Length: 208
Image (cartoon, rainbow, N blue to C red):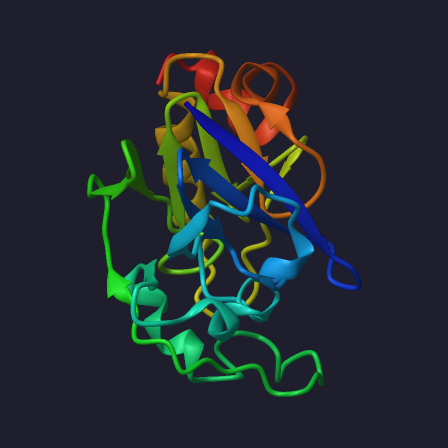
């Protein structure tokens, strides 16, 4: 049995999630510290999963790091942890955001074990070169690839709309009405987005 907790980053409106799997947990897109969550005291954070490397999704990353906590992300976004221009904090004239993390690099099809649960890695480049989605049971964490009624922008460094289209085709082919936990805005479902989100629904209509 898993449970998902949500905390928002005020000012940037990015969503940070905690996926609790029994006594263990993964924080997804750590934009806020652990104190922002209200979770049982016996839960131990052992994983930090990054959907991509933009600054508004890694603001509190270093606060989670420790001997028994590892960060996971795509190698294609790895440089963004150390480069404020690549992670867009410098582009927006903000204070430099960098991290000391040495992440474990994962790619499409990899499986991460958290307690008794398994999380599948889905590579979805487009918003950034190394954008990832994470699937666990009926939950799908889409980062800035798929939103309610929209998709992530592709005009920042590393963005590519043609790659985004291929990633959306991949998501459109997933069966089941999964719960969608996006990097911004409100929660939604895969069926709803297949029906109402133009960028996703057109691939369903093509039976891709």
